[in-house]
Image (tube, rainbow, N blue to C red):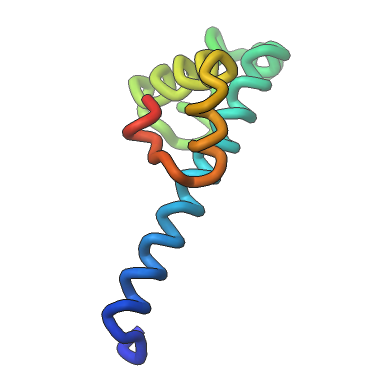
Length: 94
């Protein structure tokens, strides 16, 4: 990393942030699909939010927030598209 000049460092940080945002969007899409299919019941969870809390090591509060966001994402076409392209962070989308 010491071989990166400041512009390269900044560019790489911004690029990786966009990848994280797009990855988070995909993750929420998958959480939404798990919710729609009721897949969380197969593991004995009492709610969809219990599944990512248990399986993905989220706090219960964060898991509920993610499920809430996953449920709304399909209703927000433009926001969803920008999020999927890595243009919006999860903090801005939620």
